[in-house]
Image (cartoon, rainbow, N blue to C red; front, side, top):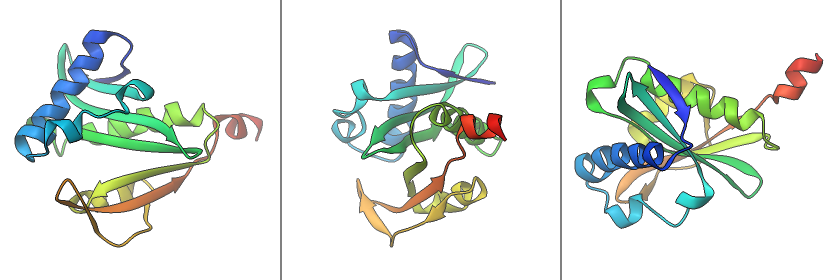
Length: 149
């Protein structure tokens, strides 16, 4: 499996299709909430199993921080490291940008997954699209810093 930074309309559509299957069909999030006004200002990532899209994620800059969003994996790929692959690719992308911190709103059941990746809970539970979430953050070590040490 390989994660790509979506650069074509077809790849971005693959990301949208995965998100619709997971969030809209499976979790019953209204499509108008899932596909939003931030799509054109975001970097999209797609996990492929050969030619088949298997997962997706989105990244954007918000208030000087990297915002990780819409991380989702098709059911048949869950528990097999697919989410980690997407997160590693997004974090590698973010390290090349002028951001020092990543922030995400994790569905509460997924908090342990993100904690294993170095994220820390910084909020009480809140509802987003009627789903319990927790805000989490992670400090980034910039690529430039790594090279100069």
